[in-house]
Image (tube, rainbow, N blue to C red; front, top):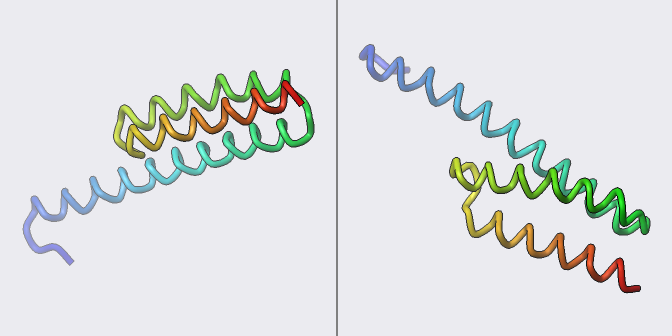
Length: 89
């Protein structure tokens, strides 16, 4: 346990940040899963609307360094590629 008041405050801040970041990551994973399920089911309209929401969430998480910005870009690229291939075939 922390002894100094500044260390106690840092512990409180870390706890708040950790819980917030966990919730953001969890909602990201859920929205990514929704896009993948929609493309697998062949619901392209639904997949595109979910992709718009997901890409916004990914950009926001990357900007706030919750995930690495390159990871956000990579996930967006892979999801858009998945939607394009579902459109063709």
